Image (cartoon, rainbow, N blue to C red; front, side):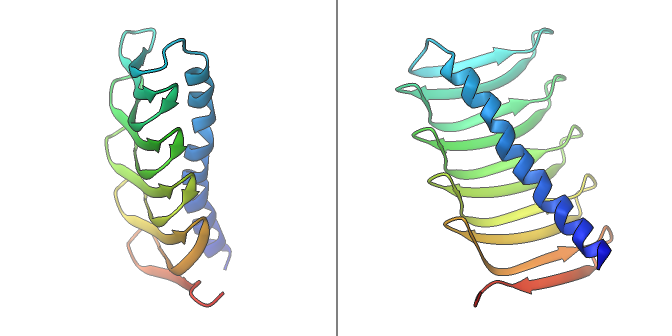
Length: 153
């Protein structure tokens, strides 16, 4: 049971942390004088840090975030400044470690977490911010650890 709790915590913490780290981006967008167009920010070493599109001062469409060495870290999707669409997160080796979906600032759709080796560890489903469907967790070898059905809760 402890192992299951640990794996579930790992899965959720990764994506929640990414969504919460977005507040730093929101603050930097608010401090910009530009209200429309592509905005790019660079690390001190000259490598692109993130690139986003603003419409009337709000994030719109895809935003790409990079590690300091230039490797893509995350692709985020926005509509009128709100989380909307698919977010994809990569580790420093370029391996996809998370895919999440939002609609109108709420978790909506399938969320998948992989470990740093690319093994699927968790699969969850949300509808309008609420847990739905079957949530599944696997161990580091891809062996099923748990399933929980949120259909009738």
